[in-house]
Length: 165
Image (tube, rainbow, N blue to C red; front, side):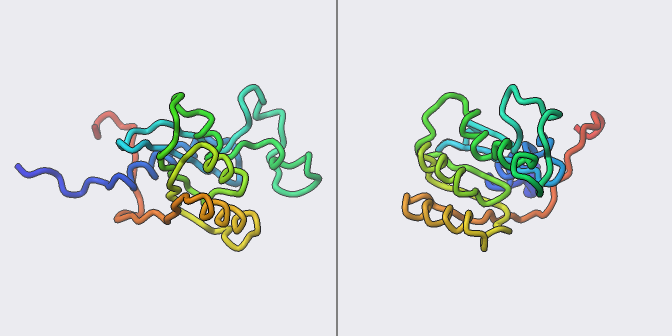
């Protein structure tokens, strides 16, 4: 018997972990996940967009528009920052981060400061926005590589049905 041929690539695997992490987000409009991987292809951090530890999800707004303090924006911690803060306690120099969305300028600052050397993203749907233009400028000047993930499959189905294991 020969080995299975339809297994997923490392990029698909780690982006899949980022996308699965996003399913933990309580944000009703945007769910983003991130996964940090070291040089040996070991996961060393994961995160999703949500409120800081100790802030109850029911006590804060999830609105996208209106008075700033009545929106989610001053309170939510982005997936990339959460992955960095939630890492397993190691130096992240030389690591890669997989993220569903291209990182904003604030997350890019944290990526650069942490020593992460590559950003692999799925979507760059806000690329025309100044926040993301600033992000690209900083990442490029700091020598952090960026690339859109290349996948051979568009969908992976996960099942919790014991009979399918």
